[in-house]
Length: 304
Image (tube, rainbow, N blue to C red):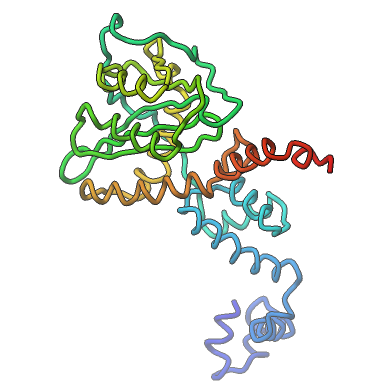
């Protein structure tokens, strides 16, 4: 309506046009005044405009995968005070949507003979009281223009920290071993009793892989039932990897394209992604709190 008046005001004048259309001249002039001076806008409109900028920034900084809840939680962490329903309303108006989980990824590991695999030391209890107590490992695939790329992950259950990963254009036996070597180098576990759990894939129960685990002082554990729940936490992380990166940023050209995106995602996951199971904070922050408690329990408990 206002644009119609703007278009014809020079020829006919504002008041005559307003008499022909359902708009009062005062309303038109007030609208134009607010366009020229945003400070005259209602407080809610001004606040919404500020929040839109903050919401867009948080959404962009987090790989454009956050929905309303995660975006609101991140704003709270940055002392941007607003209601969750407001964030939801504005994101809907802005056309911003979070990543939505799809189907569970297909099996990419080939089951080995039951007689050759280690025992199941986890029994689907994916909890840990400290870092380097329980690691889980699994791998997945990504379709590219040049064929499949396979990506292996090693995850610390305590904080959900991705401690090792590797990508390859072939589902070779040492792909999982390369991810393990990265994890061992990054974490340098020296505590007794670190359990490494995986599914029954041949990559993980091979003699070479098992020998490397034992050499590094890790206890091998392999799921006993043979379904996705045997390695549920690793499946969850890989599912988020596929949802947040692979399905949103494709098509993928080649191995290098997938490697670069995975590197960026893993850094974001470990350093910035808010994870509900650990209190809606990033893995790096969760582990920092743990080590602070070990260094000064009284301060961590608020007793000093």
